[in-house]
Image 1 (cartoon, rainbow, N blue to C red):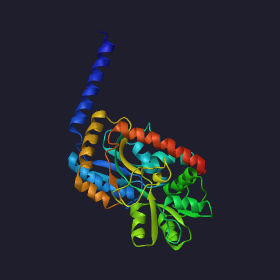
Image 2: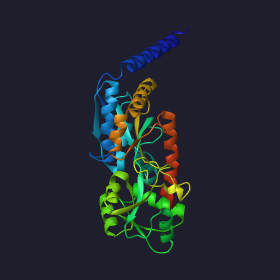
Image 3: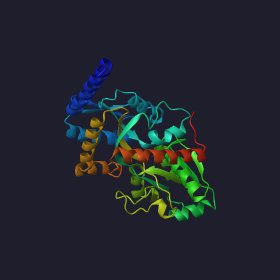
Image 4: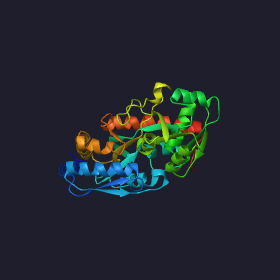
Length: 322
């Protein structure tokens, strides 16, 4: 064998051996989990609970690192550019990963090429709610009402999930409603209660306390199937076929992370998802665990699907952020 070829072969064997040894001992030190939002939000709350249980499975501490800003772009980009050794992970939110690439004219990361998807951890159902004086008790009645008189809907701002869900409904049901953007969804919810706006899409944890106290009326959820968190609510798809949205949170690693390390993380994640105590803790926060997208292939397929869906919604609605 040629000397150079032999040297190259030896170098390759050494590299492979190093990767194998790394995977075998992984994790040998604490892991950082980047959360692309501030403390106390939905992503942060889910990440902290998950980090505790994943750490138990891996036998290591997992430190949550909040990197808020630019709608999740700053934290997501930081994770994308981290060392691909398994010691930096990302708790990705579907909005930053699949809405932002269409919403922003330029983002610093590629949602497909820059990440290794590991598993979806949880989904957070959103509900369609209305002011209690709105004469509509079902989605079909709301659609009929929108065709007769002007309706206004609130959101957390241009390009927010609340905004785009309402735009989806407008397109899917061929109706018109006027968008009233707020700086935060709490302000939009307060004005929906007072009647300044009539319609709002909100996460279950955010709107169900107002529904159960009689301050808002819930009409439906946006998920494909009814949610066990509010089983009394129908889905919008029962009135508007094809309307379904999954707001998800998933574990990712920087592209290039060794497959053996990814497999170890995925196996540990599946064990966490099967933990009844973990599921119950997430349910208290208005989120549901799921194993539907618990492999990298399934998770990647979901991302590709959502990128196409939100790209069309953003284009139709004209929602853009410079």
